[in-house]
Structure formats: structure tokens, C-alpha cells
Length: 152
Image 1 (cartoon, rainbow, N blue to C red):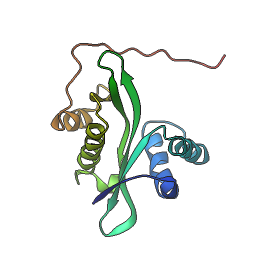
Image 2: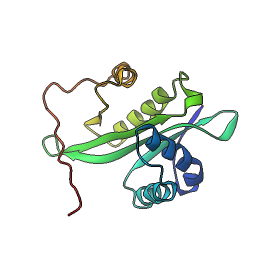
Image 3: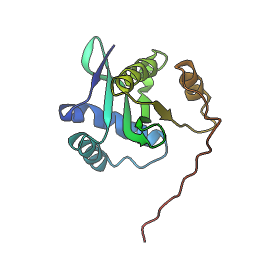
Image 4: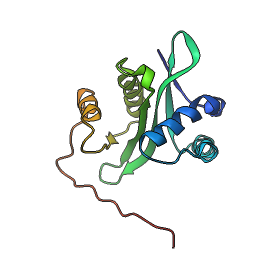
């Protein structure tokens, strides 16, 4: 498998798997809106997306991960948020997620980031084991909260 950084040229390849990822988590597919969302992130350099491609077919996408930049005011350094990671059903158990996360970690180090963050549902044991095997630790210092914002 090859891991590459996505560009606008990869939108046609990425969008169907991104839509599948959204559906996997119970969202409506919205393929056109999903494509525009990805296009904006890439055009504006608002995220970094890595693609895992099959060795035997450069047009077969095995998985992807998307990272968003953030910053730590306390350490005065960059933080990367591993916001999305998904492996196609046919590519599971091929260590695709491990390869994607290794590339993400390499990029984070190159950008002098202080850390990468990831979150998953409490019940996603497979993801938790994968993250821990890659060196992620459960945050024992901070509790995370969210503030849902509804349109007014």
C-alpha cells in the first residue's frame, strides 16, 4: 500500500469513501455537499488528508485520514487533531489505519507539533486498541466538553 497526501486531483477518488464514512456514523450521505466540503478544506489548506492506495491499483482507495491544525497556547506549539480516519470494509485487517497514522505522526513531527489528538466513542474498542498501539494515551489531565450550536 502507498500513503499519499491528497490534493484536489483526488476528490473523485476520495468523495465516495468519505460519503461511506459519514453513513457509517449515521449521517446522511450528501455526496455533492461532501465533495464541496472536502474541496474547501483542501483549497484553503484547512486540513491535511492522507490516502491509502492499493499497490495493485492506484485507483483503489483503502482508507483515509483527515487532520486539522490547532495550537496549544500553553506550549506555544502546533497541535494536530486526527479528526477522521476510515478504512474501506474490504481493506480491514490490512493495517491501513496504522499506516495512515504513522504518516500523520511523521507529518506532525515535521511541523514541530507538541501532540496529536484523537477521540472516539467510548464503545469503539477496536479504535481504542489501535490508537493505544500507536502510542496514543488516554488524557488523564483534561475532561473534554462540547457545546452544540444550533442555528438560530
